[in-house]
Image 1 (cartoon, rainbow, N blue to C red):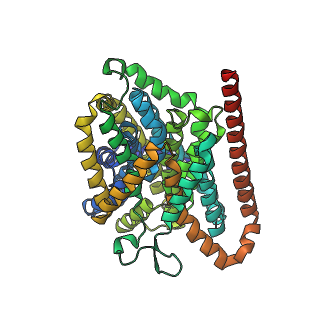
Image 2: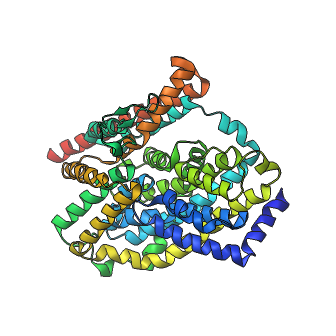
Image 3: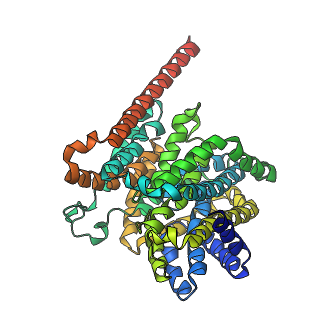
Length: 505
């Protein structure tokens, strides 16, 4: 086992051919990640013709590296312009963009890039540790647990809104849940709330909804306000000292990094939940476990670190069921699985018994690829951060074109542009009225997963699925989290009211 592990590492780093392919994969993976709307799935699909005919190891390393580093650069547009690349990056926008407005884009980028790399490495380590015990863990989860885990994620809505905003947050979250029901019913196959509009039969485009709720409202606000994204002048903005300060935030918050990386990797192992679930769950966990939750949404560095470690760590976790059971851990892994089959990889028990060297090579590819990506991004982010000091009137037209292209390319449906306009108006209304927008994405992302899993659980066990041991544990966690959230919000509201009374007296 030890010999196979280190032999795979030596074979990887000592091959100029494979290392060259990894450098190319890192470059294209970062480029795709920073472009809203394209995402990892499309990049893998476009790369398949180029790897066809390659030897198995080279092709698999190239594709996995390109897919794994997508998330490492996806937060750049989230932090710089408030434009999430996809649902995974939306959580980073909540605190990353406020930091950029405060002239701390370099600090936010340093923390997020380092956290992404560390999360990817820890995810690979979790994958390696889980190899001996993977089957019982995967088999523990059924549709009943998937439903309750989705509810657990939705329950974090209560933490994302404080004080008198908690009711507004719940309203916005239920709005997202309502929209998640648009499309084909997962059980009967009949279209709901879609009429004859075929583009809605697959549901509302997540990329379009996220960009409309976050990116366009911020750009409208920037254009009406005037000036640059950063509120401080350029001579007080970027510095390598600030960048290093962001990098050092990761070891300062090492316990949060470890927790969210492990949570992200475990969520990645559960087929069907995906990276958006991991990012939002870990963002909610960071808020819930913080001594100062009121800072979140206003520029808390923990709000950048937690979702980034989780969304990258989940890649190592989702690779596990993909390789050993042939069950893709995420939609991106589903496309990757198809590419692996083309390259001659046969997922199953033989991956443990006869092809363990390939498994370890892929684990090391995750580690080395993330190290290369982090090193490259830390070098170039000095020039990226400068964009926050450019006059918004120059940037906004280009960014809006970029957003529109991202919406179209995500599904190649021109109707998404109409949805973008409608949802952007709603998102701008939320922004002007100071209503939280994050709960909308949580409801939209997790609503469909919760509904499909609920149908399956009811067909298998009826309502008795609530009495399964794992279900009871998850129900207790959900009830406890919601009660704790309301308690903290009530206490915060009471203390604020008391302080206002003292000031007035």
